[in-house]
Length: 273
Image (tube, rainbow, N blue to C red; front, side, top):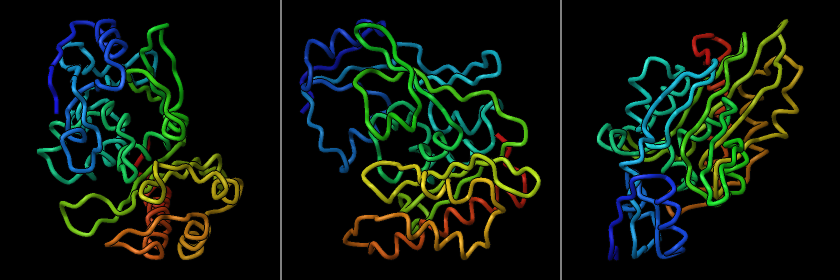
């Protein structure tokens, strides 16, 4: 049960409060995960980030800097946000939740079946962490694989490379349900072959994963037929079973999501970063 609610005025104050209360305190952004049944956190202290000015979106030398408190809905409505990231944010079906859930809070929560994080990985996004000794920048893919302590203050998308395309797909049990699996891909198509493909999946492990073995199989080759690509991805994942969804079904849907995402990105060529 939360006993004290803190409203720091600066990032430094927020870090000082976290250092003081350690594991008894959590940073509070939108609160959609902390207040959900999926969270096992029971903090005594909530450190609000609302007054720290971390909700800005700025374009700096071709890089898009997204404040950690930027909401999903803001991503969708902001014209400077690339279309693939808008599409990933829109996969969260509930607009009520999209108006509250934040980019930084979602990353810090490490939701396994995230719709947004796979696209951030596919777009080679990085994040900035505020820490007592200074700041640290690392790729989103590194952070989800092995989280580093600190307060996420922003996410940065690199300047888009010419010819680079990206797309996402997800599968869920009902219109408002969380995704069973979600996929995001990116690649450059040059002279009919894929260059530097990225394949990221949510819902097949304890956190979002990047399928580097699949990427190596695809790199430098034409895109295989969709059924072949689906089978390749399905063989590469070992998702856990759940009371409602078998591991076999999750494997199949993971492969289908990746195959359809590649078809969307390369076939329509309408999802340029």
